[in-house]
Image (cartoon, rainbow, N blue to C red):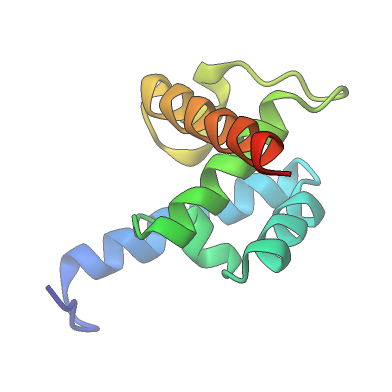
Length: 109
C-alpha cells in the first residue's frame, strides 16, 4: 500500500517520526542514532518511523538494545516504549531478537 502525500495515515506516520526524533534530540541521543543508522545503512527517520522491513527493524532493535544497555542511561522498557511510541513488550521482543542475532554472530566468527 502506497501512501499519498495528502493521506491522513501518512501525516500521522510523519508526525510520529518527528516526535521520536525530537525526543531523541532532547536527550542528546542523536549521535547514538546516527551511529546505528550509518552502520546499518538506514535513515534516522526510518528507524524512528513505522516501517518494518528487515533492515530497518534490525537497526531499530539494535538502537533499543544499545539504549537499554547504555551504562549512563538505564532506560526501562516502559521508557523506551514511550520514547518510540511502542508497547514495552514490542521493545522487549526487539531487544531479545537483537541479542539472538548477536549470539549467532559470535558463533559464526
